[in-house]
Image (cartoon, rainbow, N blue to C red; front, side, top):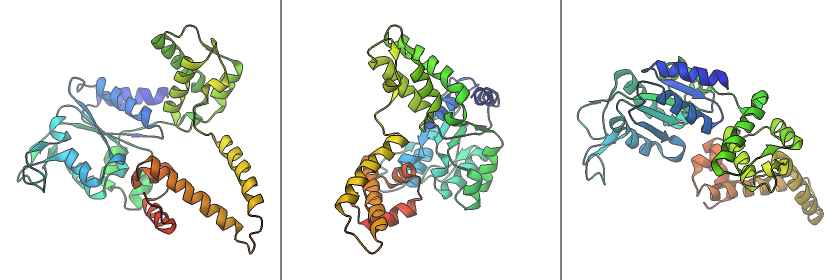
Length: 318
């Protein structure tokens, strides 16, 4: 973690170079991007963000470049994009690998030339904005598959900050937890709070799959809601199922399910159970994302084409 912070401090001094921050933790990646901006010569200019996971390629292009009046139906007036509004500052693109391949080329050309053309414009405009991208993927693999522009990858690769997941930073977990507890204790004036031995064991033994965001939420919850000054491990458990509770839940449910449908014969039991679980999982996640297939595929960790095929297979209405 300390190395990542020091790398960010060095990147801040390289005022014009594009930066790639790679790792699982989106929360910490943005914090590092903001640190780079705030310690650079650009700190008095805007820090703007573009989250590609929540918008389509068409909207991403409009957000970046803006448009001129009449560029498309509904463009009743000129609209400046991020590149115009953020000149002199920093643009942070979250999940840069999710940008459409065609937009990769335009972004690469902008970084090289510092010029962009709004939709419907007849000439280019200048913008001095630094681009910081983040990813949780191996971009080298995306390049090989044709999903990421090779030149853009090489540009970012020259200044990459790798942020390891918390499960690989066991020695950092307790100091981070103590720091966060002290922060929330002072912020919310909760009085003295400290971790029990069981809580320490839980903090250092758990993988924290959502990384610093999950750890921070757990510490905040325990600081606010624990009934005594001593925080127990149960106080740290968020209202989301861990890998252990998922196993226990399925074990209980499947035992009952098997007892009810034990008459199924002909070797179809495995397929029947897997199909029901898969359909239910897809339906639940699609409902939570309000039908956003891009977000759903990212949460599930499957390809969007695979997701579409499954939705069609199970006739899921989203």
